[in-house]
Image 1 (cartoon, rainbow, N blue to C red):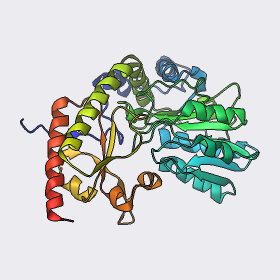
Image 2: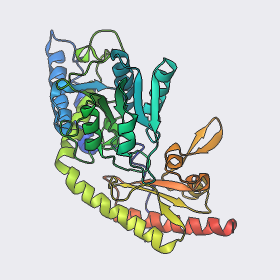
Image 3: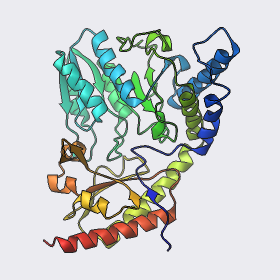
Image 4: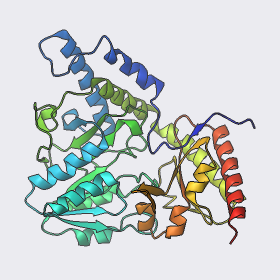
Length: 386
């Protein structure tokens, strides 16, 4: 098989913009340049109409009402608005989350802790799923919010969101869900899932960077948020600032495409993932899948390769875009907090790779990557025998 060009298998970090999304956006960088808040002329009306259509498309994919969608710059901003906004607007002083959350949830939670809130951080089970009994026990009379992500950005594990939401509503507690990795990949219905606040981002679903949204429930219950960004009262007063109309248009188009193609795409990606996994496991020993395989995003495969350093493995694959289970912090390489929370040893956490398959990957690419990884693991193990 001939060597393909550089292969991108890091679709959890970001996705390429779908050409259909780019085509929808382009007019709003040119002739349709109006500000959606300008209501005295046709340029503004045209931008406002495009924004409203995009809001409708995002809402439809979430099973929400358009008026419940607040446009933001992405999931990080949405998470900050959700956690800080809900905490500051409530009377209670306690928040519950998980140790496997993205830093965009854990860091705002730490900020709230410094402000005097109590934060309970629950560990996952070995498979990455939350223990629902531990969640029930963690909720207290002063608890105001539970924040648990829909699907993990590293191990792809899908949480039992509907059950989590039901527990929260039984106890009168708001439920926030970071759905950046799940939105557009699996069906989400905020009503059935009992979600009160949900963060999503366009660039994780073949839309542009710099566009995202926060779902804010408007009834049963009506969620109150303390505003985090003042200045103009845009987005029903929840998020001031001139809207990124081209990005929002692209976000809406990406949602429309996912709504039509999500089911078929998941089937194809699951087949590619299983093909990759089968080749790696049949040719290498001491390889381990991290997290539940049953409850998992179709395009995610997180594996540890014993006796191999993940960074060295990445360096031996310069023509393949992947990520490791380690993060560079202050010039030191630390193992993934997600893998460590699962009970994965520090050594194995350092030896993990995340394969993020996406819409534009092919069988040929998967076969090439499998062959290159197998060759590299064997060579590195020979260099560092047990």
